[in-house]
Every structure is written in structure tokens, then in C-alpha cells.
Length: 288
Image (cartoon, rainbow, N blue to C red; front, top):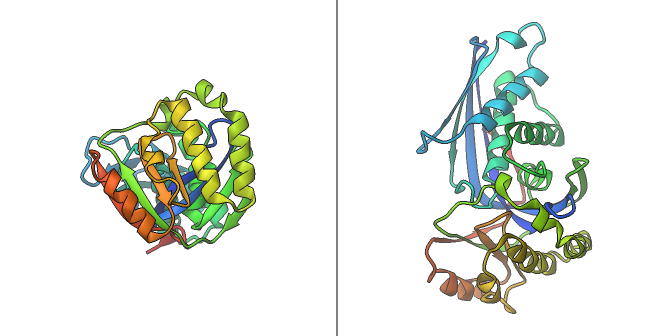
């Protein structure tokens, strides 16, 4: 079988980390990962990451394999293989949902190559399954994956892969990622569970549409649980609407008035790493 597909998925920032309670919330941001899938008749799956030849490609290979299993013609599926090439603006292991973006883009690119137009949440859940099987996530990251797939901000139950709410938002965003990595699968879940009462408050705030407040409470709770400094949070207060550690770090995200974010950027620019002004994405993953 021959066929090529291409899809683009946005990164995301954290409103509520799901490690403590299984419920989480995230919002899509305008940083992109692109996946190109070339089908073949080898029955094998190979991944390549542009500019990172030594990167682990297990996740995207599993995404393509599951997509072929789900959507290829039954009599042909055991012979179908693929090469997956990903290219990304999103730093890996920075807490900006690079894995979710890569999974979503790969699943939809494979569907595109197969000539299939799947339901977005079905495709999202397939990528989440692949992430669990590849061991790159503790929670399954349905919150991150749904925000990337759908755009806007989502609140989810990651234990049931259930979408609790979805809202299109238009926010200015500031992101800072230091010159370090923190892999989600390595996070200390037991320490995170100690802040579960605070995480419940954060989820309730998010379900009430009070996303900025939710982010800030989440930021202080999970900086404490995961051992990251709170100074980048304090530097944004009280001017920004919300500021948080993103995912399991080490990146931080803030939302608010452009002038407030510009002032915060002055502080974050003094730190080693990269500060990025961007916006939320109202649309999520798309083909071509």
C-alpha cells in the first residue's frame, strides 16, 4: 500500500495537572508539531525526528501502527507499514505537551494517508492509548491531548478518557522554557498526590471557567510537589491573569494582558532559556 498523509498539531499549556487526582485541564497554544506519514507494504513502522536523529520514536511508531490497525482495510492491514517523520517547534520534555502533539499529528497523518476522516476524540483516544503503551505518560494525558486535538481549553477525566468541558478561548500567552528537560513518566506521583485537595479546587475553578485562578493555584501546588521554584510565578503576580508550571515542568506559562506579559517577559528573559510570546489556538489538529 502506498499513500502519504500530513497533519499539524498544536502544543498546549497546563491549567490543572492531572497527576494528583486524574482530572486535568490544558489549553492549546500556537506552537506546532508536523507529522508526515508515508505508507508502504513492509508491515513495519519507523520513526524519524527532524534535527533529533537520536530521539526515541516509539510513540509515533505505535500511533501509526494503531491507526493502521483501526482504519486500514482489514485484509490489507497486516501488510501495511509506514515511515513517520516529525518536525516540531515544541521543545521535547519541557512540559508543553510535545508528546501529545506528536501523537495527535501522527494519528491524523496516518488517517489522512489511509483516506480516512476519523472523529477527533476517537483519534485523540487512540494517541493516548499509544502514549500509555509507549510509557511516555503516567496519566494518559487525555487533558493535554484533547486540548491539542480540539484547540481551546479542555477539562478532562483522564482515568475515563472523558471530556468534561471544552471552550474556545482567545488569550495572549507567555511561555518560558529553561535549558533543561523533565520527562513526565519520571514525575514523583506520590508527592503529587499529596496536593490532591488543592488539585480538586483547581479543577472546580476550571470547570467554573475561572481558568486564570486555576492556573495560579496549580502552579504553586505543583512547583512544591515537583521541586520547581515559585519565583517565576511570583514575578507575574498580580498583573497576569494566570501563571503556572506547565505539566511536570520545567516550563512555565502565563496568560493575561499583553502589557502584563511584556513586563513578565522582562523578568523571565533574565533567566537561562527561551521566552516566547504566543497566543492560544482556537482550532486544534488538522490535516495538510
